[in-house]
Length: 264
Ligand SMILES: [Zn+2]
Image 1 (cartoon, rainbow, N blue to C red):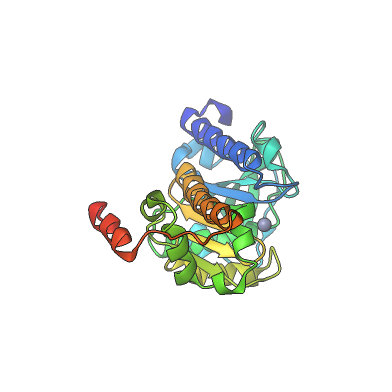
Image 2 (cartoon, rainbow, N blue to C red):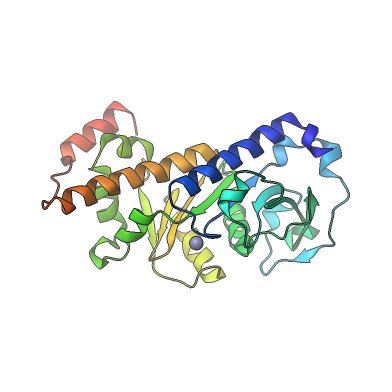
């Protein structure tokens, strides 16, 4: 029984916790957003070889580096507010098989994974190939951050990173790599995934123009914190603008001093 695996269930609880935050933040309207987490390291040899619930389902593009890996993935059409309450009724464990050309559902119910699964897996595959300790791909719809991507002058990674860093010291510290930006693509397409992967070579957080944000990392709480801190910066910026003035922002010297003090 997979629920007897305490380390796995602790990780599933953390996923549910973050799903709840996404809903509470207003970043997960209807079935907006999706989560995938590599949980292979938490499974026993016996669990890794359990009989799957489905036959193998072919992937659009192979993900060779993920062969044998197991992921918790939110379900297609499933709402974050329900993932938070019952993660195994609104998501499933899937295993990558056949040299990375297909997957099957392992547990606990045959919940079909998010339609973004091929994109998530391509990102996990890229990150694993790059040797990065990345278990999590988190995509969500933060209102304020999406709002920034509706303004052409902000669709510049360096400029927007500088703006958000300069609103509050924490942002420079929590998101030291800054953000990447992907021009608008149709949601769920592999074109969007490939454009995102280009940004992931430099950034752990990527903004999708007029759509949302994607964060990758070792830990799901850290991924949420990075997006939450960027959102705080955006709120400070919009609050100042709504009050009728352009916020001064921290100076380059102040930002450089932070980088030095925190060895960023
Ligand atoms: Zn989305």
